[in-house]
Length: 107
Length: 120
Image 1 (cartoon, each protein chain N blue to C red):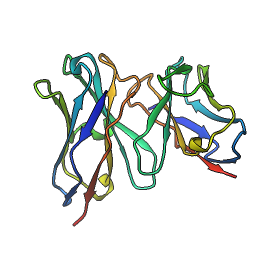
Image 2: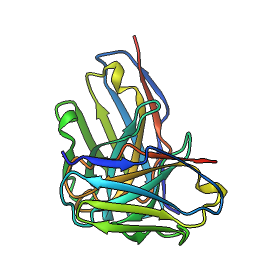
Image 3: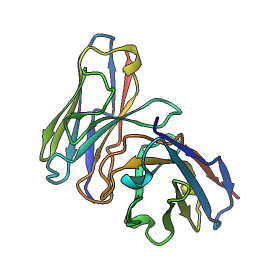
Image 4: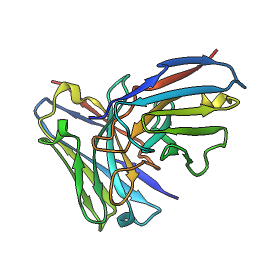
């Protein structure tokens, strides 16, 4: 199975900050990475698919980059609604493994 | 609008089976697939498997292969997850999510989740 190592596991930031979350795959996976946001008690929502494509309706302050083994999710100018847990997922091969998550908290 | 509505919470004893439904609406069912993921309490997400709503092809995570079955009913636009031989560590919220038609790629719409509790 492909391992997805996500960092940091938690992050404190303020409204207006720019943050970066990193995901590293255990082997090259081209651009087969998705990013999800999850709020407590809710289902995840898709932010970015295929490494850099913004899902419909997602604000442009979310940006995905990377290919091969190293991927980033950038959020420019954090808004109050962005405080949540973020997961990367590889869709290169089954099983479609997730990173362990990054909990973004208000400083 | 696209909606996936899952069946309600279940409580099962160890060794039993559970079947969770995922009724879809707002799109052409057979043009997409459905994935199932789960999330144990306080833990991350775990992909379990996928079905093409067009061809019925399935893919399963190896760890569930011998006790998981994912099916579909095109007449009701509903997908199902059946997990057998339940153990306490199967206690989790189970999510269905819309996926791509010919392979599991990304999940753009999700169900609300179904809590399955396994306890004696």
